[in-house]
Length: 182
Image (cartoon, rainbow, N blue to C red):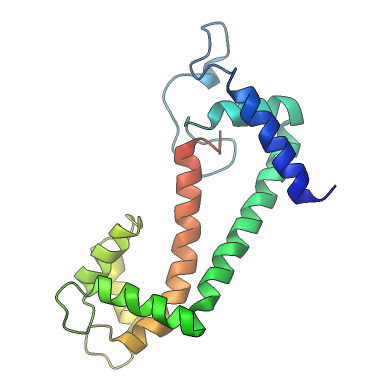
């Protein structure tokens, strides 16, 4: 049986099992199931979320080591999907997508992006860790003609790397928020 079919079978089983798993466990269960949530983005140290009961059931059934390996395999595959999506930036479709993203970020319509517009666009994409200093740094790295703004061609050159890195980070954060990393 292929990995994909196995994963879907296991996920389906645990989804059904999760329906019978209490989100808030009885008082006699270990404290690791209750209490304050943790915010680390490392497998096994994540915070409680909607999928935590499913992950705990998978851990009990598969064992912690097999679950970690399964999770690592899924993360690698997901990262490859993100990479392949970002790699379309050199295609006709990719250029159109980047043009649309650029125009959405260009809030005043002047044809260039300032550090503030970069910061706002990143926040809209969920990249809340891109603060003022980081957005200035992104502009400095992309600004080939050194005019303190990013034009469309500079945007096309720099955005794929920024997207790849930050989409993967966002996926990890979302996985943690949903409880996949408990």
